[in-house]
Amino acid sequence: AAKEVELTQIQGKIEEQRREKQRFVAALAESRTAMAEHQSVHAVLDKRIAGLESQLEILNQPVADRRKPPADLRQLGQLADSIEIPEAHQRALRAALADRLLTWILADGRALWSLHGSTEEGRLAAIVRDEIGEFERPQLQDEKNIVGWADQLVTSKQENTQLVRQLLGRILVVRDARDAYRIGRSMPPGSLAVSSEGFVAHAGGLVELGAGKEGAAQLARLEQRRAAVRELAKLQSTRSEVADIIADEGARLSKLESEIDANNAVGAQLEEQQRNGA
Image (cartoon, rainbow, N blue to C red; front, side, top):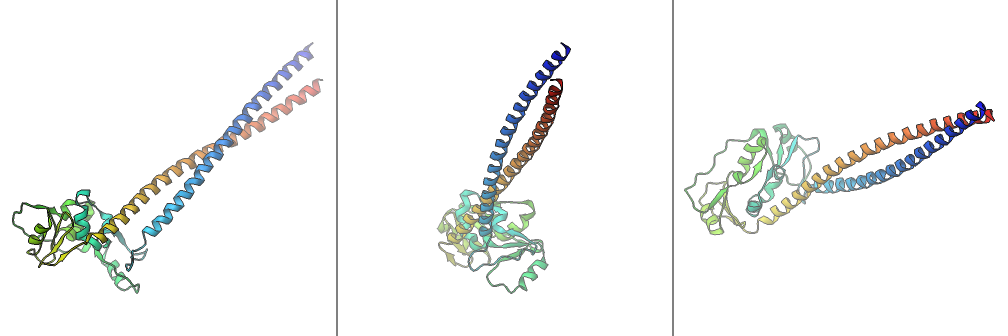
């Protein structure tokens, strides 16, 4: 009778062990499915990130007839990267700045002379941030139709304040073309006035029409690049999160497989006991 009770208990343990194994196997299948899904998402993110990196590589190339500093040169980006132009003033400042938006900001004088000694062809405008000369803003009479000086209409990082003042501080934005021509031609050399719609009048009377087209192209390219950088950072962050989930899922898989191995070992022992008892 005692033997029969023991065998009944063993049989009960075997059945419980088999039910537990079914739960482990089901959990393992669920975990493998989740792993495959996350790996699929990770692969898609890899592809999108590779595409954005290729796009950025193209956007970072210099425009036609321009060149960019060597990768090992100490440069701090271009003027267009260093300022934010409000929508209300974009048309005027695109025209006034035009290809000046492509000016490279160099970290020191050594970078400048390294550039000067380069044999690469193509135009390149540059300024050394730490060697900017004294700035003197042109004096004007009180004018009703003045919008403001360009350096005061844009935003930039604190460390670039002096540089932005030097490059934009002699550009005066005014209401309309007649105001730009009247004020601009009487300004000191090196200064200019630009109307809100993009009519540029230099000191002495030289005017530029349609000057905003090149600047518009540079700003559009810059915005594409900024958007790509933002999207790339977002995707890389998401990919990192997915990678962490995959790692956690991998640890869960390993644990489940170990539990199944342990369960199988228990099952084998119980069946051995059952055979011996029989």
